[in-house]
Image (cartoon, rainbow, N blue to C red; front, side, top):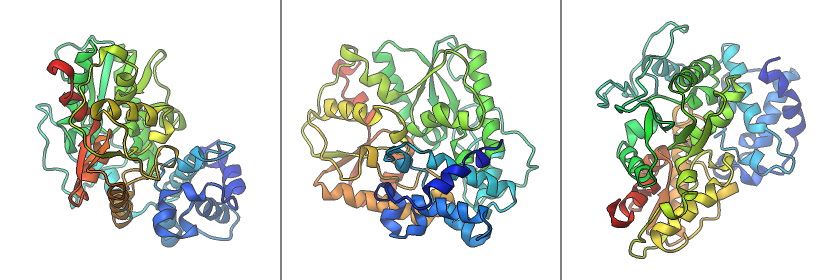
Length: 392
């Protein structure tokens, strides 16, 4: 049974339920019930009932979901509507209705292993991330095998999952993360350097491509014999912990996936941080952090250590975390909507009176910087690395 068929009861049951509507970041900016959790469920259910059909308009509406996870995170019965919406996109792609923007992204993923460009052996970023680039490849071609181990010591039991956004958009975060791990005595070999975790093709409905990425990463984990995967990005952690199961790909037995936030927050006295000079700051919960238990709390514990005070909180946080267009593939399918979400978040941050906006995710940090409008944006890992006691 396909995932789409499996989720038909979810579409049917959620199409008239409004209980999570206030949690949807897209609905908050569009103010349109068609682009809300129950609106997307009603859309899919209506197609299944023969009342609507997949066409340019209906597919466009389906792809306006940010896959933030807020609807499930705020559901009294934990119904997996976000996963059901992604399964509906996979069905749309299978039927041949994929938007042109999705096909362009797929070509880049298959050509380079990421939507940004090619991660070369010497780890220099290339210019192949030009958004105008269109690659014509056979759909059955496999993504490139990007080197995953970039240190001499490949025998470590832990790996740092770098991914593509950190490598291409915020490469300075990687050595900061390694400085923090070294302070804890953790020797983590880099993996998936410049490579998509598979989340992006998954959320765009390109499940065959996503499976290839997932299987490639699992093979690398199996061959290296690691037991701990430490992800820089909550989005990549979500892919490894949750998305792979949706795709029917299992992680090797004994492999534990966590974020660097969780590793640092649970380090106890090993992590010695000297608070910086007092400044008003607020914290942005990165895309998919709602899907990771205790992640929001752990991130705030670390930020509080660095600043010596708790953040000035925005209204939409933690279980009501606001997507900034970096999930659900919105930055590719609906860039204007993605920009609206990001600018709205910056306005919310400024409204707290904070001088600094902190987040842990590399992609979210790069996006917030792009639309900062004078606000200082800081990555949590860089901040912590700078504040390590005795410069360790």
